[in-house]
Image 1 (cartoon, helix red, strand yellow):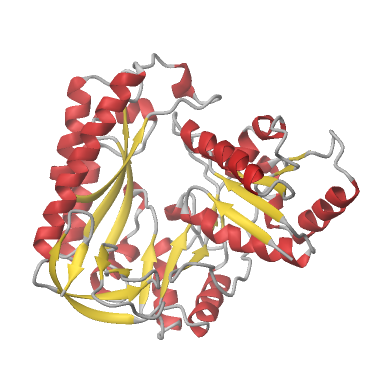
Image 2 (tube, rainbow, N blue to C red):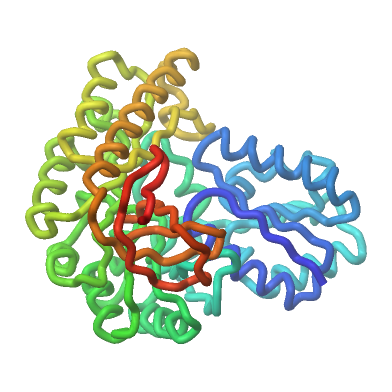
Length: 421
């Protein structure tokens, strides 16, 4: 029996892929490839299509099913591919009966009407925690605590692929964290689409900081807890206290900033200003001086001028960003930004290159500051690599068992990663 799941996109997809794998195998699917797709950019969709064609050439007898955000938002794109046997919705993929029905359909032949099985996400109001014992190929475990988004940034297609915001109950999250630690995981990452919206739909409207502190309190054996992408305007005081007081909460935050110019932020329909982003980074560093920040930034948003992109470049210095995750703007059908005046693709690519070069400079600055310091690294079992507390890649001098926690001294860097002595 063979089910391979190919995952694109975010950490939430990584978490959900393990649920998909378990359900597909339990349903008895064999010689099957599941593509868990991403819709955040047109390039992500193109890569999924490219991968489907390659896999069909390499495994001509395999059955290919497509799910994920891109399958939800543009199912016909995949249904029209002769290599694809079935397209499944983003919510349906997490239900065992979906995979049982898929096996029945594939075994007895998929009709044109059955090829696309997409659910109406507007009616989804709950997110159940799907228990996962482990994550194939990962030393970090991912716990989905939230799904969906109630905001409508003008560039973003994801709310249409994920539905409204909904939270997993605190007790379920704590139990899953304990289960993963018992299975040997030493680092857990909390994931969601709009993570700081966690709790707004639960009784009493608890905040993300309450959840973080509950996990650390009730799972004392957990050495490391990480938080994935955050919206700085929604971060609560309890989370800030946890950042200041909880050493097991890792000193690395990835921020959904998107741009460094106030006019462009307004046209994106973001809820923070440039000043808000800078103030948040300053306050957080006051509480935790060693904190490092990553950030998502979009280059070439419609109407962006030279002054606007200069403000984005300057934001890296003003916020002290270490890791820049740069997206060339990609118009997504159905979003307001797709109807705005577009920049030439050459200009978009040029500005993305400027931001990436700035990111390289900031990362090298971080590398230089790390030399001579002692860091704790979880070996990833890929020969000689792991990540430090700051989510910085570290090359080790010897192979170590997957998941082993090592204390190393940083002797230098090669421009891409730190080097342990």
